[in-house]
Length: 219
Image (cartoon, rainbow, N blue to C red):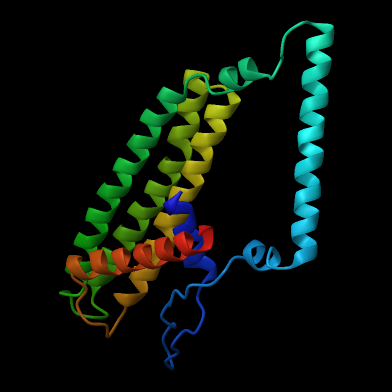
């Protein structure tokens, strides 16, 4: 869940950015309420919400009473839910494998960033290094998209487990692409050396700001 929140904040929460001529603006994460939180401060929206909750409870009681009268037992559809999430253990293992590849990608990116700043600008070696890094990154994204889907077909996962795995796959792809591309901008020509500690600290600060914002919104 934190990955999804981080991706959304990374894409849409660039408020109050500092702009410098000829360079991309830095991202700044500012805590703010969600749209629903602000809407629920209005009395009319709280009334509509309470009406929908009452309608939902009445429909549930109506269905429960009908099942008791006609069949003599409650039919809440628990079996269907359990069937949909059959194979969730396999999905978790595949997800763990996907997250492990992101760690490998981070190490490779850190190595590329530290090697690149030591190569002379506009040199052939830097061009080969950049092209090789870009090609490897594209291959990684293609494999990241195809391999989990192939495992879903091979294992025959049911809809619930499959959708859960695919949603995590999309969130990881967005996180990796947005994070690495934003850090790549910092390693452009004329930029200072980018160490592994700098990248780690930057990601930690981003995740901390987003998690703090999420906690305040839920509270």
